[in-house]
Length: 153
Image 1 (tube, rainbow, N blue to C red):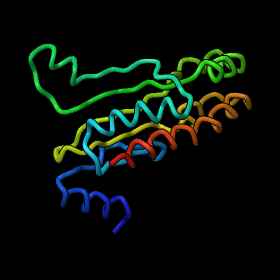
Image 2: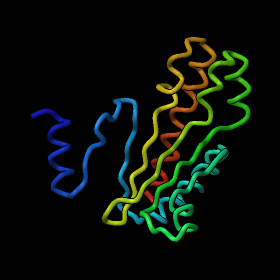
Image 3: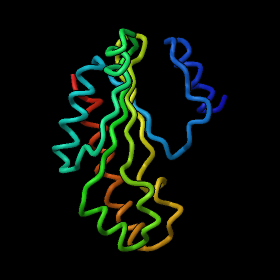
Image 4: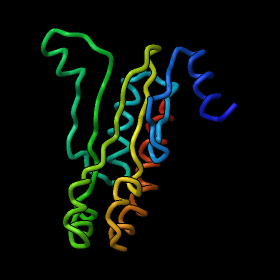
């Protein structure tokens, strides 16, 4: 049995599923803590890593404003100006990829799933060495952001 098949079977036992075409360069982490705590920890972790929350799309809040209740669902778009300046100087077309998204959604059991594509994968289509350098610096920052948020109690 392949590792993916084993993962799918294990998650199915818990009532969860593997996204249909999850790319190898997509990092997905499931929390033990409740969605609301993970969402708060994610925002704090972004600030602790000295990154900027450029945009915050909160589908749950929007649905609530319309009188509709949905599970937690947010997209946080994260970047920082010094990285943007370097990225644009190297290849202005690479600016299309910034900010980088972190997707957070509530699981049926109240925990949270956090997913993001690694900056190296997002910026891979742009071969300029300075773009690659920015991506290499961002990879551990995004990992630290998500690791801290998912570890929140």
